[in-house]
Length: 419
Image (cartoon, rainbow, N blue to C red):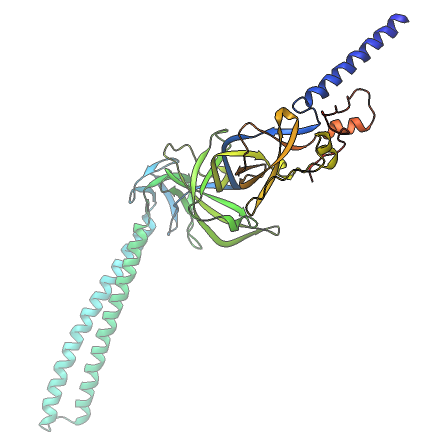
């Protein structure tokens, strides 16, 4: 029994020592229960986050204007094609028959027009004879008038025959154009990224042109169409630098430039966003159409600037915290320019607490770039009170040591959080 009691006492004592060491080490930087951060120097970027999809700058859907059966395919997925290159052929027999029929119709109508021309020449001869005999009072006036009517009728028939020839020529031209559409060519230089038909498949173009191929013009120059929330769109301007990541290459960042902010709103479940087009170079063809991009649009940038956490800009010591450092009131940090803020710095090896007035610049949401004052790289700024230690101390736990008194100071601080 004594051994068990001794063993339990040893375990409790060991736990007490371990927890005490932990809390002492947690506040070893200042011994006051204040949390601090080291002022660092580096680059800081303020940005707007969005998501979008990678696309080729120019994408053309190649279809068929006529119906028919696919006779052959001259291009496939990922094929490089040139403008005017044949990429597919339709079976042309039906359309060739229509061309032959239209040509035969035009030949018949040309013969009819020739017959009408001969009739006009004969009617004119008959009219001249009737006019001559009528002038000599050898032919009644009614017959002279009938000859004139016959001439006019023959001329009208000739004009009708000529018009029918024009109509037949147009029909023949249309049939020839339809026949030419059985040979499908690439409208642009590019890469085939989609093929939707196979040899032997029938395509119907009665209502709309079926899409056979999709060709991307130049995959070395792409774009991201990012959806930017209406709350952030007011900060976006053409020419702003953009960085983005894709899931295919984790940890690798790609760059681009804002080219256009489209005015048309996109409403999805009462959420309004605007499409922002980002130009993206893709010289090594690593980026592919359809990839999802996580975009950061750069609004402001500070290079080689002093950086402090935003919590340091919000911290204000209370009276108990100031008393712990032997101060009865907050010393003046100086009057800065408009928009200046105060940060509290542990000075004199952690023995004193003093404010420094700084001018806040770029803010990325967690960290701010600051200038002015005598804030130096490596200084320790206060970001808040150690809440865990304060809560444990207020509960009366014997495992947590009380805050030590400062030389010449008052009572240990009980709060001291950020406001």
